[in-house]
Each structure stands twice: as C-alpha cells, then as structure tokens.
Image (cartoon, rainbow, N blue to C red; front, side, top):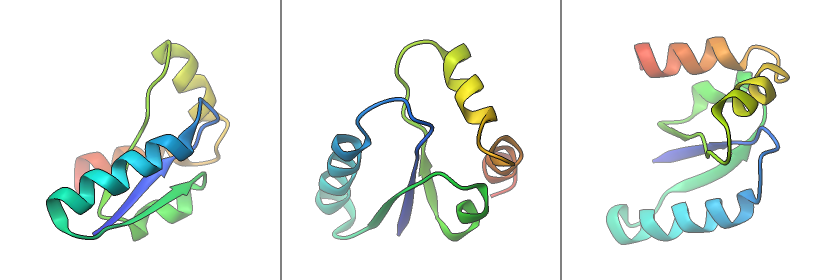
Length: 80
C-alpha cells in the first residue's frame, strides 16, 4: 500500500511519517510512505494523510498555496 502525507508546511512531518510507517508495519506488514507537496502525485497513492495542527482555516489557506491540491483531494476523497 502506498500512503501519501500531504505537506502544506504545518509542522514536523518526519514524526508523522515515522508514526504512519510504524502503524502500517503493525497492521499491514509494509507500506510505502512518502511526504508530498504536489497535486499531481496524489493519483499514485492508495491512502492519504492530511495532518492537522491548529486551525482548519489556516490549514485550508496553506493548501490553497499548492496549485491544484484542493481539486485533487476532492477527487481522491469523493471518487477514489
């Protein structure tokens, strides 16, 4: 399973990545976990993690700075 962690510059994603890797090893045996910051990469993953920290309003504003990510996230969640 391929898991994407969305980087919208909100915090320490290395620790999030390590936690997801450890959890996936305990449940699925092995997953490919990658931190991404590009909308075009989302289609290559089975699961996504959108880490939250603080206000959702600020999260949304940060996501808007990544070209096309809102549309790709919507497509991923609603269609995939």
